[in-house]
Length: 473
Ligand SMILES: [Zn+2]
Image (cartoon, rainbow, N blue to C red; front, side, top):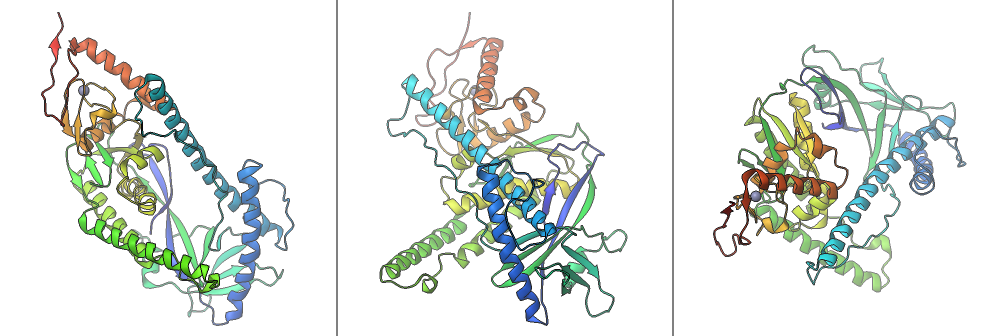
């Protein structure tokens, strides 16, 4: 069970938040195999139409699930609309992700050019390049249907829990698939407060994975935020060495040695398989006879890491009862920065899972947790606001080049995140460039207030020379 949708806006104390919870893995089984074949047939046509609209909405038009139908299909008008709306959702998510990535690229390019002009660029550094994204193609059949085309109906006889009534290509002949809930599903679908069956949302999802059809139902729950607005603020920095580091100096979970070793073994296994594939391909072995490149151990490893993340987030919330949280809105750039040690699929699937898990824990516990901008949070000095990559002489250490403030790098970052919770000026910044300019202005103000001038550039960590500062006047 997990949160599908959560309100993005920051919730205030006493304000109800609605959470949509999914009930997954309800297996569709039919005594009559012909029934599910009709569903396969429908899915094929549906997927093809969805793909046409995805391409349209990603390239030529803005996503609009209510536009006039423009592709021929044997599907009914209702199914046509469902396909178009699903495509609009896929295209919108793709456009948002692409726009973010493109902005990150522009920021990286601007930073590169700044260094070029200032003559401070690393000779090995290359200008960032933009590679245009491909239009997304769903691999497995997935149908997000509404009650116009798929309906869950209560069973009148006792042997089943319900019927799924699916309208098909054969108009007027709906498909009826019996639904049987497991004890686990029944428990999820019962409100523990009232003991009553929850109201199931009318939209359902049908997925086909490895030849099996699965149904996902959902229900909406209201959770009230209990955190008072003046509750202590805990900043959370997200990373690999430590999954969570809090601004009070605690650390939770880690991508530790055992996981690292498993990951390495899995990577080698996949490389060997890829080489074998190539070899067989050259010998003219047909594609469907080649060994698969997807890895079961890889999937297991991802699950294992996610469980470790979930435990870490749980413990962090338990140990900070009565607090509110500020955590980072991970950007592509900060993920890249944080995850050099991981390979691509681990990075994509797991770093993003940490903030999701924080949001989910906060919602289900009625605790206030707010995403804040992460730009430069790892390079900014928490004391004097000076921003410099050199403030991080290595992965663990933060040592300010100006004021000499020295601490664990992740603790410095989490304190910055905590301070950003009520920072309206910083929230108003729209680019990384603006964030940096604001922080440097604050640094100038800090210098004026403390009346300090740097007489010689301090050297940190690497040589362990103390930082020298001289009082002005
Ligand atoms: Zn400083």
